[in-house]
Amino acid sequence: MKKRQSAGVQVTSLLQLQQFLTPMLMPPSVSALTAATSGVLQAVGSSTASGMRMVHVPLPLVYDTEGACLTGPTQIAWMGQLVNMPLKFVLHADGKHKLHHGGWILITLGTHYLRWDQHNLTLSTSFAPLMYLFCKQHETLGAAKMLIDAVQTTW
Image (cartoon, helix red, strand yellow):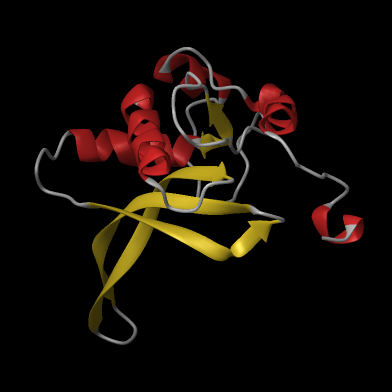
């Protein structure tokens, strides 16, 4: 991949990825994260008052996967809503092979929800991403376990 296409960041090892994500380390509790983001819920992709859009969820290096999990304040709020709805949602994971960086890909874990489109008068489903995994191994059991553990660690 050419340097200009990757914003000057070249990740070739897990150590480089961890060093890149160090400033985005998740606070030790959800309440600390809420305080860091001024308690403002925002749309996906928008920044908070403190500029924190994505946080790195620290996990022990016990998985057969080289990667790191990421989420955001809005996604954490969505997880909180799901916690209050036991057994009424399904999680779905999928690798985004078109979103890759060399041999590393993005795997997303999320849920689907029904959405009413008032303009077209139709009912459709939308995907709400909850956790992202940037990893070298593509859709492996270790990657799936890492995503699930990251969600459980967050809530």
